[in-house]
Image 1 (tube, helix red, strand yellow):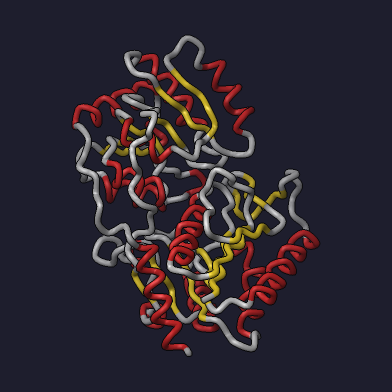
Image 2 (cartoon, rainbow, N blue to C red):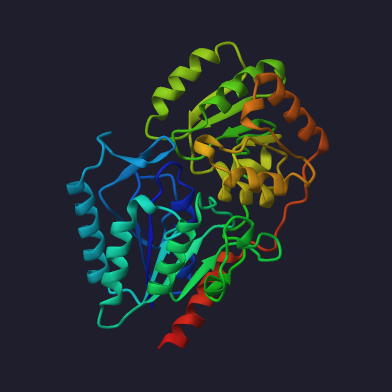
Length: 380
């Protein structure tokens, strides 16, 4: 079958990473896959086996998801948005998918509603209407007012045959973060968690006994990196490796390098072998996005989470606190983040020792393929 996944990452790269994981699972099952990405290029992510089609890219202005910027840092205007919508609808018409999956929408990306709705309307108008599914992570940003949940329900009822929830209902039901109406509940399909194969240890053992500090692929996390440099001066018997993401990584690394003079710190851009480094690390310091959390559960690496909470974001905090009951995991709120508090937390999780890596419940990508095939068969 022909599968199209539409995704736009605005800040980090987690949404695109998860969409590509799903795309690879469909491709490995023998299907023709196009992932249509509307965010900034992220060449460090694995797109093996899928066709990756890029719309005119955009990103959010920091955590202001209503102010969208082009790759030239210009505010997007109506013409730019129209060009994206046209490119997206043309891709749908050209590819003629049998399955169309939208990532996050309509539970988020409301600022891009016009292009998503255009793609959905185009799909419904194809001579062979595709199976239309939504794809959402375990925890969503809760709606700020009831009307947003009602609008999402209306869009689901108008266009969607099902909503794929990438978690286990017994562990993280969607109702933890989103009001689930009766009509929405009838369309939910829990897939389990979507993760790549567990990370294999790095063949060169890069990261051995280091404190690995990361903040995803976006231009965020500078306070975490600054605190890590201070903490590295307090725990000087270990090397701290800071992986800096975003289009402005070189500028941010240069700024941090001034702070890191004399400290046992390595600064470098995000790297594609990050997951392979985790099993070697003494500890990880990171935010608590969906993909990072799963990486750390699979690797068993002791972890300090500093949940992203800019712009009143609560998703990562909910996820981090749900994991904090496990051994060798601590949560450090951003308002309490200093070099001293981070150093103490890192020492405690290292002392607690590594957890046993988890190897069950992460086959959500494969389960998504099977669920999709069953739903398509019913539709035909």
